[in-house]
Length: 104
Image (cartoon, rainbow, N blue to C red):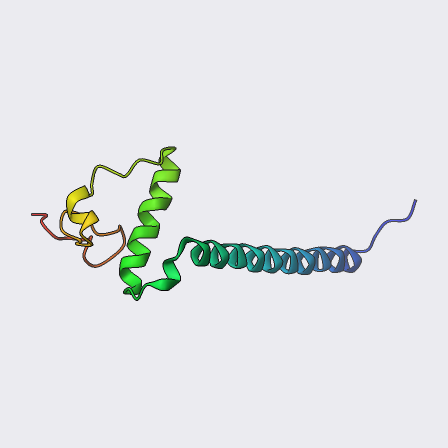
């Protein structure tokens, strides 16, 4: 039985890493294309809206899926949200608006 050399082993690992990176890039591209299709089909492309507002809405949707429910979170004032106002909504975690305000 022939032993593989250390160099051959490293080369094999590097080749596998390159293949995995390529596969990851393909999956990310496919996922991105899917998201663009969904955004287009939902009608969101028909609206001019600040990126921050869209990102906040998408984070809210993601949170609902993480929680296993499709009901809006309780941290959003539904009447204000329906009117397009951000009043009553918490700023997304990790944003300047969501950090340090109202805390003493």
